[in-house]
Length: 325
Ligand code: B12
Ligand code: SF4
Ligand code: SF4
Image (cartoon, rainbow, N blue to C red):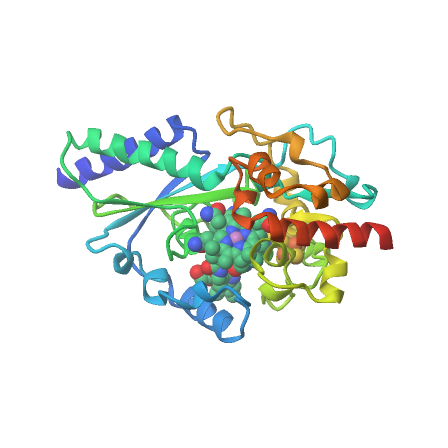
């Protein structure tokens, strides 16, 4: 009887999540991530692959164990929203020919997903409260913001598999999907992990402009254009700077190369504000922008977190690369 009640609550939570506009939802327990994933994370950190992201070395006990992140946690509700393939992306393909134009990665052409997904997850948490007739329950909402192994948990909740591009990949929606979670003290019925995996394919590895992805499964952030243009604080080394091309913020190559992404339906979330005017951008103009223009342009964007100085650093590199072409 108790089990039946728990199951129907889990189904109701998932139905509500889909009604709210999430593309995927699944549930896993709040148990620590698997031993293989923990060992992989530890090896990755020891190898220095977190580069300058010092925060990745902190709170490891929480990152691998949702119950250490939130006392009393029993379940994690894992959700995803598709941000690509971008429908009717007329600019796709311009990357090699758009001299003096900068390119912002697909996920950042929308309003800030951290804000959007957190609001949606809050609405889901409120719905859970209603389903429980107002009984108080703890819900911690996480979208990049907490030390939590989001991909490991999403895989365990059945949302997809981890591709060789290291992306959580859904066989129907591909790898251009963003993740968000609710860690909760409610015991929900866990879903089964996805059984799929990459087949004989290494397209993402071949597409990576810098060798950040390697065939042996390593991922070196110090070489990743996403890291260099979004997270890295200082100057960028000459050879790597040359490989950035005209990517102003983030990089899409390893996600776009994946057949699962190429075969996915176009992302269509009517509520997620899309800003086609952010791509392509005139590089020479960016260098003349006063700081307020940056703030104004990217007021509701995840690009805002970069700040005007690093945005101009990226624009200078892109402009140089365009001139060297
Ligand atoms: C740090 C970080 C980065 C770093 C490092 C990326 C990396 N590959 O680790 C940088 C700045 C480079 C980055 C780039 C990007 N990021 Co980022 N990033 C994160 C963050 C905050 C932590 C990731 C992390 O823990 N890395 C450490 C490694 C070891 O963990 P992991 O890759 O998650 O892998 C785990 C499992 O998949 C498994 N695993 C992975 N590989 C293998 C191999 C073996 C053999 C085994 C056993 C296990 C295993 O073990 C790991 C332990 O948990 C997450 C949010 C979060 N809290 O999780 C977002 C997140 C991963 N990023 C995201 C996105 C969208 C991106 C970009 C696409 C943005 C862009 N367009 O520029 C790129 C993609 C780069 C790439 N191919 O990974 C999304 C990914 C969604 C998805 N579908 O997977 C996340 C989940 C944010 C979100 N909430 O949606 N990111
Ligand atoms: S985001 Fe770009 S640079 Fe980073 S691993 Fe993927 S293809 Fe390579
Ligand atoms: S491109 Fe191929 S190897 Fe890379 S993630 Fe997609 S299916 Fe896997």
